[in-house]
Every structure is written in C-alpha cells, then in structure tokens.
Image (cartoon, rainbow over all chains, first blue to last red; front, side, top):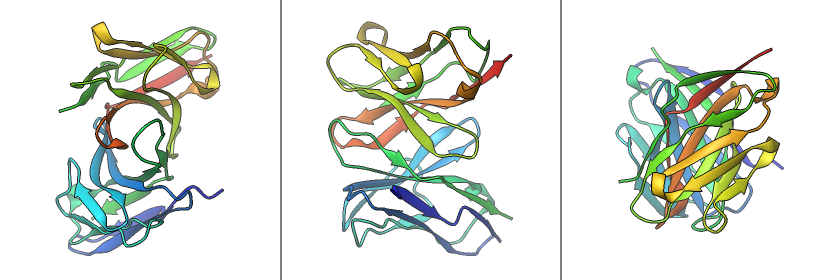
Amino acid sequence: NAGVTQTPKFQVLKTGQSMTLQCAQDMNHEYMSWYRQDPGMGLRLIHYSVGAGITDQGEVPNGYNVSRSTTEDFPLRLLSAAPSQTSVYFCASSYGAGNTEAFFGQGTRLTVV
Amino acid sequence: AQSVTQPDIHITVSEGASLELRCNYSYGATPYLFWYVQSPGQGLQLLLKYFSGDTLVQGIKGFEAEFKRSQSSFNLRKPSVHWSDAAEYFCAVGSLNFGNEKLTFGTGTRLTIIP
C-alpha cells in the first residue's frame, strides 16, 4: 500500500527558482491538502482541495499555487522561491467530511538559499 | 476561528512513568479532535480521534485521550511510557463544515524519555 507519496524528499533551491512538489495518493480520497511545518509553529495549512477541479486557500497560501486535475494528484508549485519558504512540506489526504483520518506523506524538506 | 494550544513545548519523563500531554482548543461547535505523533524524519501518524459519543477514547500504542467540553481540553495520556514513545505529538481540531482536510494543529509537544 503506497498511501500518500511525496517527491522529492529533499530539495535545495536558489532564491527566485521555481519548482513543483509532487503528491500522489492511491486511496481514492476526495480531500487533499498541503501543510508546511516550521519549528515552534506546528503545521500550517497552505492549500487544500475537496475534489478534482476544486481548490482553496489555507492559512499561508502566498507564494504557492496548486491545481487538482485528477483525484490522485495534488502538486504544489513554488513560483519564485524565497528563503522564507525553507520548511518541511507535508501532503495529506482523507475521504472527506465525517469520521475519517488524514493520511500524511513522509514530507519534503526544502531549503532555499 | 478554530485554534489549538499545546502549552508544553518539551516534556521529559522516565521510562515506565505515566504521561499526560495537554491540549486546549477553541471552536464554535462540537469539534473533531485528533492526536498525531511524528517520529524524527517521518510523517504524522494518527494516534486517536474524537468525533462524538464516549468522551474517553482509546488509540493505538496504549494511548488514550479524554474530551472535556467544560474545559475545552483533549489531553493525551499513557499509563506507562516506553523509550519508543519519544517523538513529537500534535493535537489538532478539524473543521465541522469541511471535515478533517482543514485541520488546525497545535505547535506540538516534544517528548523525551530517559532510562
């Protein structure tokens, strides 16, 4: 069972570069989301999606774009990387509203220099 | 807006001792509440959850948590910790309208176990 798969696991970017963090799930979950984890701040929601073709902003969306063209995939795009985006990024998926849990990927550690 | 407070940044306990990690939440209606555990370099794993019903919920690895509406708390407990319990623990509250894809997390409590 693959669950939620994130790639890459590690990435170093230069300021101003763009990149896409990949997230794929094989559980047929409708709901997917992206969080960033910073020391002392817990996990903060960047963007989320309640189904294919539907996305919305979370708590800290600036500098990030998302799209959801399929149920399985939910990529996160950094348009122009900044040192403030150095963080660990987690993708999560769940069946949706109700008595369900979120399943998390292993994370992507991103450093912007 | 919903919020979660974990007042203890770091807790150290001896192996075999009991454990209680505190969590207070703010939410306008009946919350969905979760405890997740994160081992170093890993993603988050669900320990337990509360949606309704019995206010004492049992989870994996011998953990339990009690929902107390009057105190807006959802504290995590374990009667006897093991060295493998050393990790970071996150309390989270889910949005009633959108399910748990819109979780709000606390800042986490790091647990250290000493022999």
